[in-house]
Length: 252
Length: 252
Image (tube, rainbow over all chains, first blue to last red):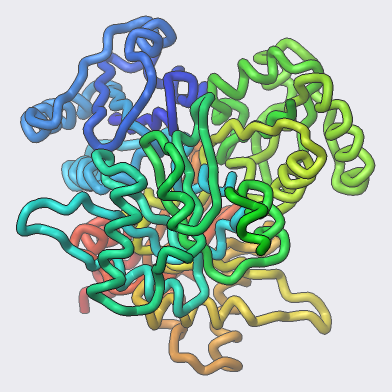
């Protein structure tokens, strides 16, 4: 059996008791850290599960994955992955490959950014589809995320925007304004109110709400995600007002 | 400080290591089990955290909550809640109340049905807003969920449908067909393909994909959630084909 074990949103203590137990019993335990950032200690996890962890690097993905799948036919093997396992498409591909080959596969869930963002006070069932904001590269600056945000906006759904890990909030906000200039859907301006969720699950997590121009002046540490809120329920509004920056200024 | 600690999706072993540590250090630990079902053992959690848990019943909610909030001003108090804490609006209200009174509040995340449903192979960022299917009562049978499903459908987003805990899958499917007869949006018929996620996170979890008429003939245990998929990516389709019921029949 192959176990896909979630590491959760921040460090080594976000794994579940079930996840630790599965790894303790498994013959081999692998860990992959390329699908998203993880801020824990591998040594600490090794201490909890009483065995060495084999790290799988991005480059050796295909070879290693094939070996892992074949091993799982006759042994219990665990792979530790950041967040909740099947949120990353890479793991869904692995999950599917196991099913195709008739190898049993089980998911041990953990916390994910998708629900952790509820800290800002927005109600989760009012979110539309999530978008990824890619870091622009030379001759490659896709703006397709804008269309999904517009669809959510038209249908009065909040939008969670996940940033490329190499991108900071200021650059992401510039890109949103830039996309607006090209697409002209009337979503973003410097006056648009936006939510920033920074380092959720860590001791220094920070959530801010403010106009894009004001958020740009803040020092915000990575990793961070942005949310464009739709029309607000009064309780959502009360929550956002508690984390609003430049309160006096915006009351004018 | 008040800690809102997630219990995760199924039993006592879905809590995180961080959650257990917070409860160990807390002066008092409460647990509420009325916002959604939980299948764990309170005694087992008490064993992990070395203290008694005070259960908060739905009826005593307001009184108890006020006591808990006031206690949290000078002590570390933890409340254990099913799933990931702020997914339930009740806990957001408590979170907000703490912020208003200047009491520090921290969320310890855990697994949630919102991401656990990725087991079916659908990609999470293609989901639109989630709907709740209420159990119809005499003179009360709101069909507003239908409009949200229609909006998702028009915009090519998958829809997660959470069922009232007292409702079984067969009754929920009947209600969808009934809503179709009233609303006539052309979403549901007996031939519509649907996904059923039953008892996710348990040892007997089950995921099925099939036409409504075929799903209705299956024995499916509660709790369960339904998903109406939008247009499928080829990898999503491959996954769904692996869990399809009546494979031969639908190939005709």
